[in-house]
Length: 164
Image 1 (cartoon, one colour):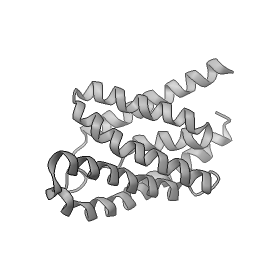
Image 2 (image 1 turned 45 degrees about the vertical axis):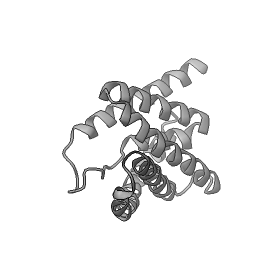
Image 3 (image 1 turned 135 degrees about the vertical axis):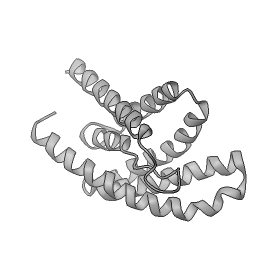
């Protein structure tokens, strides 16, 4: 059973990394370059709901570290960790409160907290001049979080039905 779980979590990590790489190669969705769908977080949400917070955290950390290696930028890792850690803990707490239901609500909170973490890092590195972008980040977090949450919810439902 342990080998099967490790194999599946490795596949989820690889899938999240592939999704990240593909999404990074796509043109910007909006005139503001920091707005992204965050589709790799769908995988983290799936693992959080179907497995455990510990497993989801491992997949999340591995995705960020490997993505940073492939992107070749340590700055990416700093921003991703700042946003991603807040996102993960928000996802964990909301998912626990909602008992694995309403994944789209979990995802919205995760996206908002991801943006808070990234804005915190941006203020630290670039100063308060970036703060005017914060309301746009929150709005985009709500929209993209809803989208990725709906997608994660559909996939969790399907994966539960095929017993993976």
